[in-house]
Amino acid sequence: MTVPKLKLQGVAKHFGHKVVLDGIDLTVGRGESLVVIGGSGTGKSVMLKCVLGLIRPDSGTIEVDGENVVGRRGSARDAYLAKFGMLFQGGALFDSLKVWQNVAFGLIQGRGMKRAEAKEIAIEKLGRVGLKADVGELFPAELSGGMQKRVALARAIATEPEIIFFDEPTTGLDPIMADVINDLIVECVRDLGASTLTITHDMASARKIADKVAMIYKGRIIWSGTRDEVDAADNPYVDQFIHGRAEGPITMDVLKP
Amino acid sequence: MYNPLALVGRATLSFFASAGRLAIFAGNGVQHVVRPPFYPSLIGRQMIAIGYFSLPVVGLTALFTGMVLALQIYIGSSRFNAESAVATIVVIGITRELGPVLTGLMVAGRVSAAMAAELGTMRVTEQIDALTTLSTNPFKYLVAPRLIAATLTLPVLVLIADIIGVMGGYLVGTAKLGFNYGSYLKSTVDFLEPMDVISGLVKAAAFGFLLALMGCYNGYYSKGGAQGVGAATTNAVVSASVLILAANYLITEMFFAS
Image (cartoon, rainbow over all chains, first blue to last red; front, top):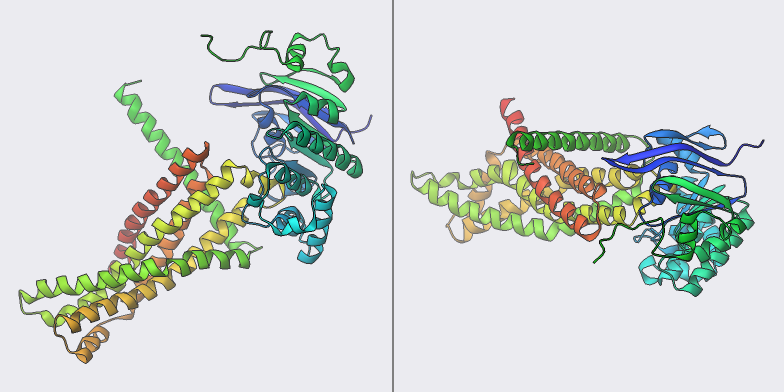
């Protein structure tokens, strides 16, 4: 059996008395696209931050290429983070830097590449997501939301990472732009041959980019399967989520009038 | 909930928790200050933001302080016929105390607030997390350049403030109080010792470090959107100002004893 690209086992995290992750088990194979679906506040983002080493889990192991990376710090963490690319929910572009500098950031700062060379690659990556070279000279604040998302995608793929995380890639975009982003994600990932882990609550996006789907609820993975199995899943939680019904086993913490 | 013992306990615990967190933050920051790689262009940009753009406010503060100092000392010293001491006391007061402290406080208001707001916004928009995922240590890239720039720039600012402050005293002394131009300058220089200026510059470096540290610390750990960034900015200025005044006493005590 081949070693999976990314494997989470029993990852748990609590903040104070609130249990956010309650033993997550998850595997992303090589070149595979796993989409984790789940409602707001179910621990999706915390899970991603644990993998990125931004939050340290209380227990459990996170293996990248078969090596446990939990608790790595400093240069050991930088070494495994170099394999990752991440598209943040809000883009998280550096607003003090021009667009091309944003895209080239990982190449210049992380890899020590020369600026001129990095700029060429940045412009090529911008072209890859359908942006002209002159956009590179603008600042992120001068771009629309959809363009910012595309720049963020270009930045995430600029270092040609082996694993890419997408944190709600289509949130806040109109349906057409969301579909454009979905197409770009599928294309870019296929070109790079990267493994991806996406968290989203947008089912249209999940259906488009997923090979496999897992559903997270109350800090646990309660269902997983292939993309085609989602619609036929006889799991009441999954059924409620993908059809977006207010009634069902998942209850939102809202007070009824 | 309202048990007084529990309240005291909770306050004590949270005080020590934040003191410890600040100490770890400062230790981390200093570690990255002394260890390469350095970012000269980032340090340069911060030095311009901290130093050059603070010149007007620091200059005006020093000018009026020097002027009012000359007036007040003249009033006081004339009560026992010691008016000739005005120039000496002005220069010692400015270089030892008022130059560094007032510069530190004014720059804290400008720079700590700006740093806290900038880093706080970067925190809540996940830009700091993004730095980490792009294999760049945020301490190295954001905190260290600010600490270095502020520690190096404040002494220069204070030196300028010293000169402008003495000039303020000179203006009032000669134009209003009837001192002779030459003798005012002569008594300014004659009784000034190198230690007066040096102790002020040492203070300035320490204040620069403290105000950058408080700006970075509060910004780095800010949370909860616009309100959190606002709170971080306020905390940065307040804590930087209080720490500057406390450090001022400690450093003075240190120089005074030797």
